[in-house]
Length: 273
Picture (cartoon, rainbow, N blue to C red):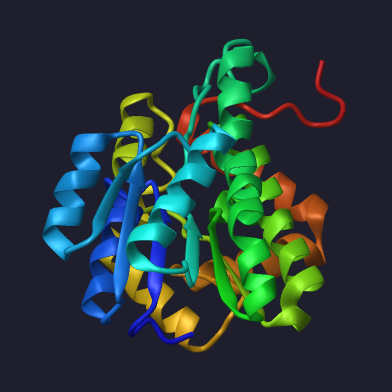
């Protein structure tokens, strides 16, 4: 997909990967860039920096997503590229009875709404027009955690797995109708989300491979040009996925040992009392 003269709609555009995407799309000659975020001031700042259109909206509310797409269409023309990029990492922690399945229902619900249902809402808003035109491109930001898993954020990992599955389904169902689909799965990126996880003590496994958001944007532009489904700013993730698929038990054992080494939480093996 070529970005020149296209209209791109980016959720979570006020910071991190989303902000980098907005600026890079503008630099590539996009005709319009929509910077959508709950953080209205942040969205305006990014829009001002790249000549974009700032929209304050909550991607977890379908009516707001639909309103945003309609406003973008009215002011910039039809959306050509929809980037479902907004994400949250809630319920994180290393305590066995205070995170994971024990995270609050509110954290689980918000994770589902932002990390998965926002993708569903975005697809509902743009697909009718795309199918009528026979053209459009979907970019869903998932995570390496959606292909593998993450040590400290179960709700994040589970919902990002769902985001990958949703993108796969879109590619299968609509790929023959002129609709392109890509799924962005970075590992560690220096964003407010990851820095916040570090403050919670659950980002040690990401620190050695952190890259900047601009590097992710570069990978996205390259991946879109090559019309790839999986966009992996960390190429090693592809090898990890192969190892996981080739021997899941060995992979899980290795992940348990790594988690224990990083977070002082000895994994229980078969036969442990």
